[in-house]
Amino acid sequence: MSNTLQQQSPESKRLDLGSNARRPCHRRSVSAGAPLIYSGGATLLPSGNICPSGKILKPGLPSRGPNRTDVLGSGTVNYGRGSIVRGGSGNIPVPAAAPPLTVKRAMSGSDPEEVKRAGNELYRGGNFVEALAMYDRAVAISPGNAACRSNRAAALTALGRLAEAARECLEAVKLNPAYARAHKRLASLYLRFGQVENSRRHLCLSGNQEDQSEEQKLVLLEKHLNRCADARKFGDWKRVLRESEAAIAVGADFSPQIVACKVEAYLKLHQLEDADSSLLNVPKLEGCPPACSQTKFFGMVGEAYVPFVCAQVEMALGRFENAVAAAEKASMLDYGNVEVGRIVNVVKMVARARSRGNELFSSGMFSEACSAYGEGLKYDNSNHVLYCNRAICWSKLGLWEQSVQDCSQALNIQPNYTKALFRRAASNTKMHDLVAA
Image (cartoon, rainbow, N blue to C red):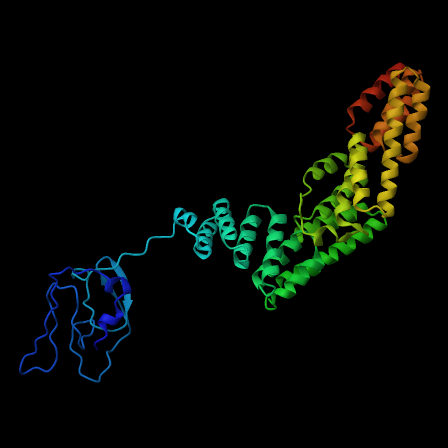
């Protein structure tokens, strides 16, 4: 076997041995036909039929036993055959391992594949911000590289920037329509957005027919959304709340519409504190791909549903200016929708009644202020703020019983409404009902 030199690494072949390096000679004795094992200190090995144990092989016979691990210096390499001297005490040099790819080297380079590999190393280490910087550079160097776009989407997803991630995946499949990994990422993102049809379409385009887990999630999500729509139609808000929470649990955890549906259920169940806190948790998807905003949700444009719900919550909490702004935004996004149109009208009329009532109250016209607040309650008979404001007017007119009644109405809607509790106590005191006070 004379292939030892062929088995050495390219780095070993390029080692400079110096001008005085001498190639060892092979001597054969007159009586022996097999080569001798060279025991000198030179850096190159002789050729010959020498097995790892140092025994001489007979020509034509294979060595016995499996390949063994041979130690060269401080490294361990698996060699199957050839003239290998076993042990770590020999003078055979070991080629130095190639230095790891560094961020500095990648940032100064111009090879997008090298930069992408550096990003991959950072991503695997959980350094998503640094990985994104690498992918940004790779995309800048090679804007038409679909893999760089897809990897950038992965880093954006890890950082919670899902709308941007979806845009990058769409760019990747635009550059390479057959890019399965980008389609798979898009399917997962659309699932999190609660976009069943969009997710299913990209799942099919990914060609991943073996893994049925994503499709099963989509089927379950679709079932919960349909149940939610039916319950909402019949005003079964407890069921709406259950089904919206179930949809989020399936995987639609970044859907503004589904979270807003949960908010609407809290509102209709008069759990205003829960509605207000949940409204703060509605995911923001600014710049989301058009496929997200154009999808219908409960019969209205998906993008309009969030401000539609927001307008109702703001009005219920007495933030009338915010309510009007949200309602107008919903109207701009879905002008022809009947539900949106009705809410816009209600919000504007209630806000106007409250503003007019406040003006009259400030002018000392308490009877007229009562009438103004009453007009607002015709449009929204569950507005605890208007009830309490009217109760104060009744008390100013000395109509303590009517004041108590309006305070009680406000507290039925919002049990922890401190202003109504105080006003009712004051009115009961005036009627000498100290126990109730």
